[in-house]
Length: 187
Ligand SMILES: Cc1cc2nc3c(=O)[nH]c(=O)nc-3n(C[C@H](O)[C@H](O)[C@H](O)COP(=O)(O)O)c2cc1C
Image 1 (cartoon, helix red, strand yellow):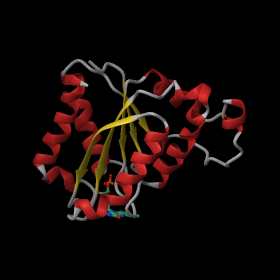
Image 2 (image 1 turned 90 degrees about the vertical axis):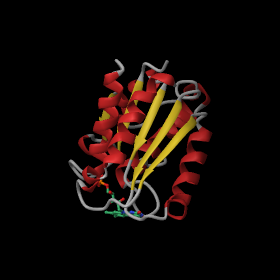
Image 3 (image 1 turned 60 degrees about the horizontal axis):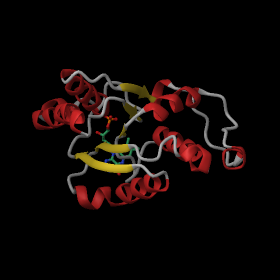
Image 4 (image 1 turned 180 degrees about the vertical axis):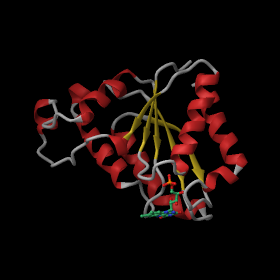
């Protein structure tokens, strides 16, 4: 049973579809006694990776910013949930900045801190053609997380929602998100 869960919310829009779905996931998790940690990237100060390779050379990051604390959550987690709306067939800039900073874990001394963890991907999006629209994103997450030894257990796409809060009209999505939360106990 997974007990330590980190949800990373890369949405830019406050109270948007991603926020609502993440809230449902947390409700579902709490209903089974789990208490996921939530990181809202929109409220964090995370510098862009500047490619200094301090992480590869010295196994530490050049920056002292909110990533320092977030790494503690990552290190103690069994399951990582990455939630971001689809932006141009990819993730938001906030999420990309966060993911770039995971390069820290590419150093052999740091890799064990994340390797072996499981990942769930949550992606609200506007278009209906999920397979076509998500192709690049799927490949991106697969390659990135594979490099870090993180196993993607499931990817969820919530299509056909554009306006802020549109997901509230999709009761099946709200239930699905809640179920993602309740099913975490089985991972
Ligand atoms: C800059 C930008 C790029 C987007 N690119 C895509 C896209 O490539 N495919 C898609 O299906 N939806 C795209 N969307 C729509 C969002 O994924 C959709 O509105 C989503 O519900 C937003 O989630 P939020 O309410 O959490 O912000 C884009 C939206 C924005 C603002």
